[in-house]
Amino acid sequence: MSSGPAAPWWPPTRSFTSGRWSLLIRDGELSEIAVDGRILLRGIRAIVRVADWVTVPWAVTSVDMTDASVTVHVEATEPQITGTLRAEIDGDRLTATVELEPAEELWTNRAGLIVLHPPALAGTPLVVRHPDGGRSPAEFPEAPAPHQPARDIAGLTWEQGGLRVDLGLEGDVFEMEDQRNWTDASFKTYNRPLSLPFPYRVGAGKHIRHGLTLSASRTTAQLASGAAVAPGRGVSSQGSGGQRPHVINLAATGPLPQLGLGAATAPDPAPESAGVDAAMGVATGVVAGMTDVPLLVELDLRTSSWRAAWERAAASGHPLDVRLVLEPADAADPANREKVRSAVNGLVGQRVLRMGAYAGGSPRHVSDAATIAVLREALDAAGLDLPVVGGARSHFTELNRGLDRLPADLDGLAVAMSPLFHDLGTPQLVESVAMQRILARRTVELAGETAGGAGVHIGPVTLRPPFNAVAERDHASPTRPDLTEGYGPALADATDPRQQAPELAAWTIASFAALAVPGVASISYFEQWGLRGVVGSDGTPYPVAGAFEALLGLVAPGDPAVTHGNSSAEPAPSGAAQLLSGDSPDGLLWAVGSTDGTRTTLLLANLHPVAREVRIHTPAGTITEHVEAASWVRRIVD
Image (cartoon, rainbow, N blue to C red; front, side, top):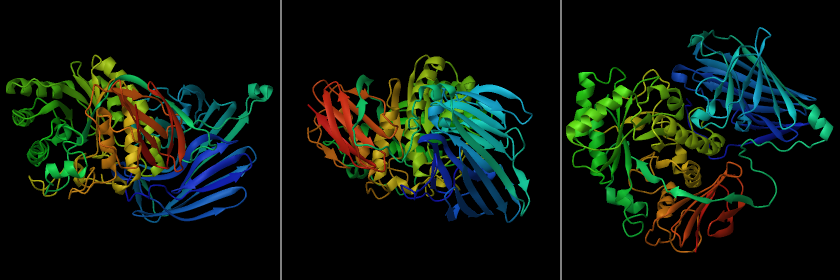
């Protein structure tokens, strides 16, 4: 899990080219390592992870470049570590080394070199070389793999676009994990197997050194055909050349997902609900039924403030999607059962859409049969007939690894998403959107396999995780039973300054476009108000409020004028809107829409750092639109 302040929306980036090779230097990382324009590696990094898997943030002190080498010098202050990340080019071969030296005794879960592979390699066969000289077949998995797809790694070989790529590793034993589980756009090969004990001690002044050798040769078939090497298919934040429009095909795919907000976890005092709704520009009469937007509220029954959290959410007047978190011990324990009954009894007379329950505590954070049974028992005793959902309250990772714990009688499958888990950089944030589409489709498939085809409920979608799912203690405990301190994410490292950035509006529309696939019944974002909200604690709207308004407007097509940025036209009364959904051409340009049979509403989002022209094919016709960098456009088609 990453820690420390976030960089500006786009970090400073330098490019390096030598012969056939090119790469980018940003945030202390060597990124998008390419040969002949084809991206072979997503990144090479020096990494140090300490207690609870928190990532030590680097400061880049200098970058040295020659015609054939680049060296990045980094340092950390807590703990004190100096290091270098160096790449050298020698013809068809690139070598890279990571050298780290702690100034004091270091207890770490992982320290050294990690390699990130592009997600476009999914489904590609792989040969794994082992330290003992043996070889075994594997693959970059097509579907997100719950566990390591390759272990005991000394080297990897694969074919990619007419190239045979060979990666040799030294200095430790490596293994691979599928980081798409966390919406990272990569497979990660990392040092030190997780089967070994951690944390482990590195003495003061001890030198840590890892290295890799990367080579790419044309295959016999390519040499025979003389085929050119095409650009890589990996998602890139740098954009692509050329001026021709990118094309997106939208088709009607069924009902739109219900759009919701997370309940605020910020400290009291709370702004008046009417003031929050009005500040967003979506008060009744602008978008009818703003007070019908659901709030997703998580009540951690292990804390002293859960009652206060419930009371504040209920007082908002919004319908509620309630999730309970229980002690990880036996859910049927009398103390657990009493708390669940107390929480459920408080729902009587309230507008509640659905309920869910999770067993808290690492490494679980998922629903299980006992937890759901206790919830259903309490609902029956209170005379409440509500849909019961379950899944993972943290990341898709825990859902993917905990499917065997899920009961078969769920009315819906739930999962949360937070892209800034391993990395706080904006490239990670924008590239996560394409991974969200992969996970949304996979979760729908899992719902068909484990929950009888029940709908999928995604949320909350937040920038940083609401809690650290890999920490020994997964929740921050308030010292008071009221909300003077706030609760949950307000007490964790869960706030990101980009919550208030103008670019987050385009990101949110792109995220909704990626997640809105058939089978997804609801999507909830961020919080209603506060530092992690769509408006501030004083009711001042953040730019993302305009995106949320525009998404709500998909069910209420408006004036046929084009609106840009965070403005919008006044909508007309809603009809029976159908979702218009389609794939992105590059993972960074997205479109989503709705149609009621007479009018089509489209939202286009461009996550590139440069403007793009997009051609959208819809059942109502084709439009071409210019979208500025990291921005969005709303268009109505009669």
